[in-house]
Amino acid sequence: MHCIKRLATVMLLACALRLPAAIASETLIIHVYLHDELASVTEEALYYDYLKHWEDEMHAFTSQSIEVIYHRDIPGITDIEYAARNNASSTLQAFHNAMAELRFQHYPKAINKSILVTQNGYELLDNGKTVEGLAQFEGISAIASRSSFANLGHEIGHMLGATHEHAETVRTPLLVKCETYVYPERAWDRSNCYRYSDDNRQNIVAHLRNHQP
Ligand SMILES: [Zn+2]
Image (cartoon, rainbow, N blue to C red; front, side):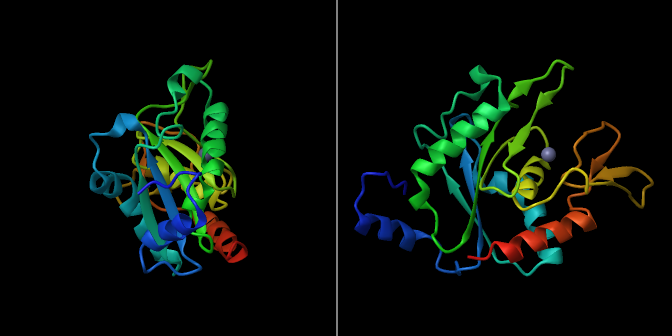
């Protein structure tokens, strides 16, 4: 159910009550907004490919309770024309502003983070690379394309305090290198580690500790 702003307080309460009963005050809620262009993508597929490994990683170093809530078909949010903008900052700001209009959708006592997931990237740079995601550092809003299975873990990591400077590459048992979630530069000969660096794990733990409602 998507609540809209003009609904009365009683309906606002109804919205809150529709959230999973397991949500406690300290729960980290990831609100995933699927762009309209992903109408054929199921929530199960999105979770398995982009979020399950992230949630497993979070549970590897924190006991933080986590819920993922999906949102679709919300005019002004899931239909943002990001390709026409060709500007990642502008797209993130548009998403954030639209979210501010609907903030009461979010559980008031939990740690809410919102991410818009799109098919493609946001900005073609002069060097030929494309910006595939952007997040407010330690903020509440982010955007991420589906170009890499690690993109959501990367941008959610930024919202939780993880930095590029503290990311790293790790040599795997097969002697190839993998990139931790927030590593800034993708390379064709490196895989995804599907974990945060130890320093970024500490950053995330500190963020969650400091942002308990
Ligand atoms: Zn980044």
